[in-house]
Image 1 (cartoon, rainbow, N blue to C red):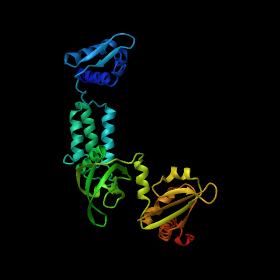
Image 2: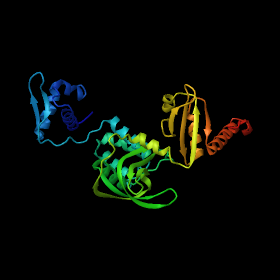
Image 3: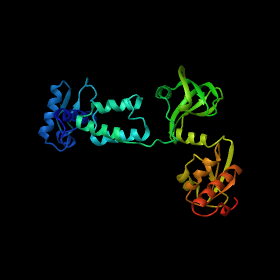
Image 4: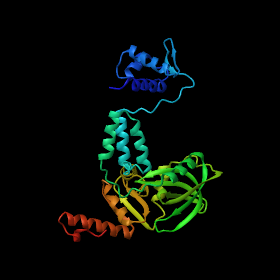
Length: 325
């Protein structure tokens, strides 16, 4: 059962979130207590110096007056446990107090009621999440600077190290930050290349926020633009003929694998793109729940044959049963 103080804080949160809330609605929000008890919690808030105003009449109710500070943060048990579960799922150092996320989560746990805090801390300490090997978490300080620059339309100077180890620095207009496939990307316009770029933030080594400003694209869809960027401009060409409409194919694989266009026959689609890893690309194609055929990309065909051979071997058949593409 919540303490009187916790109930009073819940009443404050309810009044602040629903200006004009009546005593009977407030009583329901507080767990079905009586209207008299709800008014008692309002009295407790007023005694604590919180300006709760009453408005009479058919459209009246309680509202927070001017000068009130925001209500303290209040979590229900399900909210607190849900938050911890989400953090553990996405950040596997959540139990490490020296890690920024682990430290922040610890602060939240410490301000929870003792009984709830004990349950949440037990989940945090005993859960054993399995790290996603494909995930790459960037530096929080670098990410924070980029977020601020995106929000304020400020140009940034970005130092970057590529997967091959090459390093460079460029000024850029940071359009948006997109979290996709376990990685954080900065979608931007790079001044040095005078072109759109998507930089992995975990490979950004330094960020300087400059005084210059920019105007972002008027109709920017960050996820769609990132998917388009990730599917084009790579070393190996890909072309797939799929026996389904573009709408159905888009629902199965989205736009991350390339551009969709109607195929030569009604009800078919041609998927055109590129990749730096034909083997990775070939692994995505079985997600298509309809027949398909690889039209272009000898490297992609060879990767598909290797994967098919492994599957046939695992099923007790021989790779020689894989027909040439």
